[in-house]
Image (tube, rainbow, N blue to C red; front, side, top):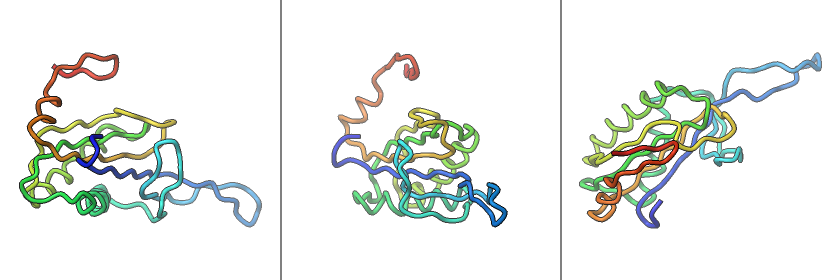
Length: 152
């Protein structure tokens, strides 16, 4: 992330093992943790599981006012799964994020969706939104050929 140009938010969905009155562990309904760390640090809030559209809104509600982003800003959006989130679910999240940004007149210049940086096969996602200037757009358009990332 280029200093002063963006924000990031992580969410994980999972099951916390609980022990019931019998002393046997069981798996309750999945929960969602907001603003988690990439290395398994706990989030700032635990809540019931939400739809992808609700998660997209919650993430952007933190990121957009933080910089702040404003109408007319061109951005790069990066959505990365944390290891075990299916690619289809990442694209479902991106669909809503794209619509929300469009509604705010914040055009997406480039997007990256995939398991770009993961953590211990966690079920979750991170969203990074970076405001772009001409120099950053030129750098983003540069070809790359690495083991897990190719851009022609």
